[in-house]
Length: 126
Image (cartoon, rainbow, N blue to C red):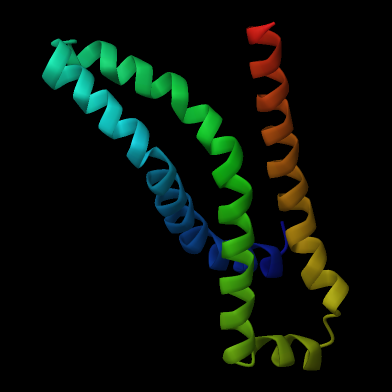
């Protein structure tokens, strides 16, 4: 992995993780309330509730991972642009295609993993 690739990936990690946590928690709030209701009103053990939570989490990650990746790319490149680092990279002889390629490979890897998870879930249901 080239130095430029590592640098861009480092810029993406924090916004991706934060975006993933925020988007997932927003989508899970309703489900968490229903799971807490099971514990309080029906007396379901916490272990079973955590197991149910682990079953519904992948379905939400299929939606939130692409959203978090988009957010991370926008935030990272916004920061790179505001700090004039893209101009510096261009002045150093790096093309926009080289910068784009660093993201394309990671984006395709995440897309491939998400599609594989969706297909695995569909096969498990069928």
